[in-house]
Image (cartoon, rainbow, N blue to C red; front, side, top):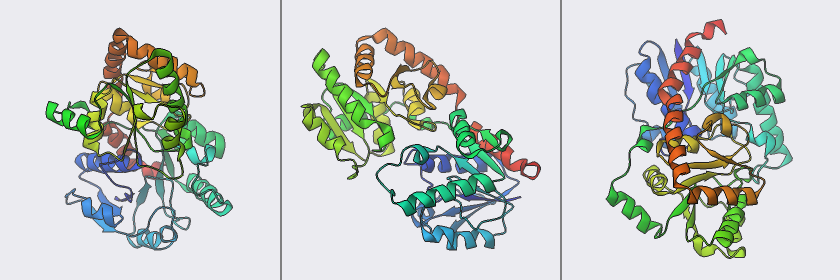
Length: 373
């Protein structure tokens, strides 16, 4: 069977779809030496793609997501290669592609939270057209959580037998503590001379960073904690409140905005943090939760969407709509060493249920049974 994989977001240095594509391809070519794989990559990803295997062919395209080229030249390229099945690792399948394909739906965030980008009528209409098209025409859908599967069924009436839930995993790199010298250099680079609470992720409405900052301000004022809140992520001009709110609340000196961090820096920050806070209103899966468990960092997270499904009992849950509840729970966990150790132990057990190898095996099963779908 000749299988195409849309890897235009392929990357080992980012979470989300880039990491998913990277781990899928890395693991599936180890498992499968029978089928032929054609990997479609944009120029930057094409340069960094290093997998060498006789049954893997990399193909260059120049079709950014959400672009006209995606609908035209990329579609033509897929047709040209006469593929038995294409796996779109994101919902952006060309509207005119009519041959068999599988799609992975990571979340339906744009259906619930418009955000501050691509909000015009035309852009919203395009999103709705593409997502409806891919869910309707896909031969099979991979959802990364039961929560995402339920959203797909509820919003788009997809039959349950058309959807397989295949969980994501966590890279082994997160389990390995960095050396003392690396940890020290990270502390110096980001001016972390005090203990800190960590958040990592993009700056978006559904991530609830504003609520986290408000909760941290309440914590500082109520308990006089001498700690930092570290927020990673590339600065986004659409969300100036992430920079402005700490000033307004008088906690600017206790909030560290690192900007974009490398994977190596992120791993070090996980291992240095007292705890990890994940205050999202909505997540399709939540890779940072697994990364935190793998790093043996206790978690405070929202009791919404897929988060309880992923964390189980290895997390202290909060109401993301209540900064007061968030502040109280963070404060409690900071003071209770026994509870932190309990969550770390439970995280060690919980993480065993997730692996990229298992994800690849289950995805390969979908490919192998494709003629039966």
